[in-house]
Length: 509
Ligand code: ADP
Image (cartoon, rainbow, N blue to C red):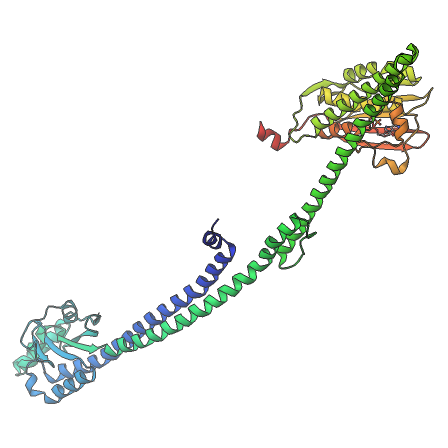
């Protein structure tokens, strides 16, 4: 992976980016909403100020009859001019037929205005528009008809008044509720100026935030990734053995990683040393019979033709014995390796264990007779159990064979078979020599023998119980041992009646 790709796909860059954006985005959004809020607040203040002033002016227009003859009401003209100047804008008075009666600019006088706002105001609705292009707010307010009469009785009274000569007022009353529209235009240039002033300040603030966020993100990402970087840096040193373990430091997650890694390393070391121990044990065990064969063959050879035929026979018998021993070690090793392999396949069948045990004991009876050991089998009920016939037979056979081998003449081996609704139970009890207490924990280890020379004498390889242990574990069973030195040993085996396929084995299938 090249340097750039390494950097951009790393945790440090991600933390940097997230921290940076987490600081910058809210700052940007805040600035934007502040500017928008300022603008709308100013416009709404302007609108309410113009509206209240428009109302006053509209009432004055209505009460003075300004619409009928604007030139007669000078003070209003002056007032409008002053207001237009104050607003840096313009004021227009429009009559009910939308003719412009007065325009402080003078440009539109006499013309007809059909702006939507003006039309709406003529119907009594006050409204405003914001002209962003020309920076102005335009408020259209109705000019009320102060003499407008609503109901008919008042109307009759009004017509009597007409008869009395007040014809002007009655013509106004006929116009309707509104005499016209007062249109006020106020420049919002100052809002735009303030807006760009605030905008500039906001940009400056954002730039400072950007620099600050950059620094913060840089140091934060460095701080967060530092313990991981240290771990990454130390792993190669541990691999080349220049360091022993990862230091348990930093925040909780890295401490946990370090602890897990150290545990894992410890396990690997244990596996590695037990593997080398196993290899050296295997070579030693395989070399011993070969060395004996060589010594026997060499001594016959060295005698040449002098060697008597009896000696030949005796030595050849010893050589055959050593070859048998070598073969049984190799066979045991092969059985062990087969059961050791991960994902070992079992040929599970529902077996009648009473029959299986009978046939197993039948095979061992000659050995028992030879040793002068009584072999007894007792079964409490018919037991049917899911087992791999070959591996299960091997496991139980090793136990019974040991009971016979490590026994004395006139001794006994009792085998019992029982079950409940969940498990089958096999007990192998002997009256043999027993196992010393400090050896009990080791007897299932490969090549472990309590008394090496005695075990070898009786043809032991030190692998039998290791095979039994593996086979029972493959059946998800348990094996326990209890022993009293000089009195005898009992092995208790418990195996589930129904074999439960492990999930990963099922998946493989
Ligand atoms: P081996 O092939 O030497 O019998 P095992 O793995 O079967 O190897 O047994 C390991 C050791 O445990 C034996 O060497 C023996 O010392 C001891 N052992 C096993 N079973 C018995 C028993 N029933 N009585 C006494 N000692 C036993």
